[in-house]
Each structure stands twice: as C-alpha cells, then as structure tokens.
Amino acid sequence: MLAFKRLLLAACLLAAGAAAGVAAHTALTHGDTMFAGKRPQNLGYTDGRLAPCKSTPNCVSSQADPADREHYIAPIPFRGAMRRLRRAVESMERSTVISATESYLYAEYRTPLLRYVDDLELFYDERSGLVHVRSASRLGRRDFGVNRKRVEALRAILLSKT
Image (cartoon, rainbow, N blue to C red; front, side, top):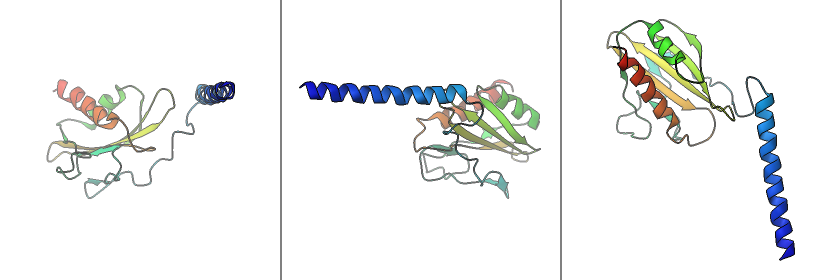
C-alpha cells in the first residue's frame, strides 16, 4: 500500500511539474509558442472558392456541402465595404488581421493560455452579397465548437450593424 501511495505521489508531482513547465513557457514566450503550429499553405481563394476543410471536425466552411452538418456553416449576408468586415474581425478578442484585400481577409485567433492558433478566412462575393467563411484550427482534432461559435459571433456583429 505504501508503494502505491509513493507511486501516486510521484505521478502527481510529475504532472504538476509538466503543467508548471507549460505555464512558464507560455508566460515567458511572446508571439508563437509550441502550440501555434505552422501557417497553412492553402490559404486564399481560387475562382471564388476557399480551401475545403480537412476531414477533422475542427473546421467550418460556408462552401462545404450543406449536407455535411459537421463542417457546413451558412455564408454571411453582407453589403458594404471590406473595411467594415475588417473592423468587425478586429473587434473580436484575440484576433489579428494578417492580410486583407478588396475581397479577401485572413486573420488569426490565439487561445489565451496555450496560444493555439485558429485561421479565419473571409471571401466577399460582392455580386451575391455574401461573405464566404472558413475557420479552422491548425492543430488537434476537436475544437469543441469554437470555430463555429466564432463565425456565428462575427455574423451577429455584422448583422447588428445593418
């Protein structure tokens, strides 16, 4: 019984040390962390299409098949200038706009603790009055609905200012 208690104590101390190490790393590191991942190479759009989502459930896209309930999210109805879209994105917590043109915006979102990065892309199809969106986590498999919630929060910001 004493050996089991010592083993349990050692495991707890090891876990606490690992957590302290990760906390120290994130507190002392400015910018990218080991959890940031690399910026995807498939960013942007071709012929009005954003890159498709990978098969993992941590991505949503308005250009996914609507029957794909895991990945599909409705595009955002929008009429206005791209700078209004940019202001809406910049008003959201932990967002950084990386690039923007007349019809495309790319931003990164970082989680507060471990600084995981999610990529948000917006393609404004002015003729149809729609903003097509793609929001995806760089690392991991699950995002617990964070990307979908982000797009819905952006939709609410844009629709509240019409």
